[in-house]
Image 1 (cartoon, rainbow, N blue to C red):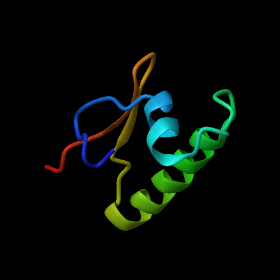
Image 2: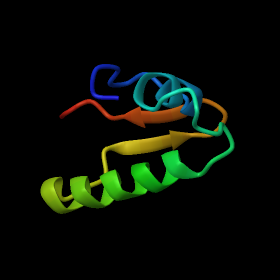
Image 3: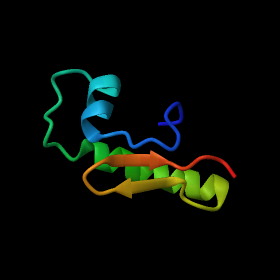
Image 4: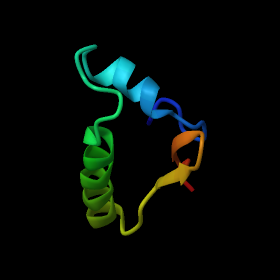
Amino acid sequence: MMLNQGRPVSQEELLEHVWDSSVNNFSNSIRVHISALRKKLRAALGHDPIRNRIGEGYVMEEAE
């Protein structure tokens, strides 16, 4: 997501590039990992730079 700042990254893309092909597409593992990542980023940065775009995916906001 950092390499694609400002561009939505779909759950399918994350599955394809991060996990192996044996992961179930309907698993909530991506949501769990994104939630943990958000908590860590919020603690480190003071805000959550990840946004959901319904029907598109997750977007990492560009640094201000």
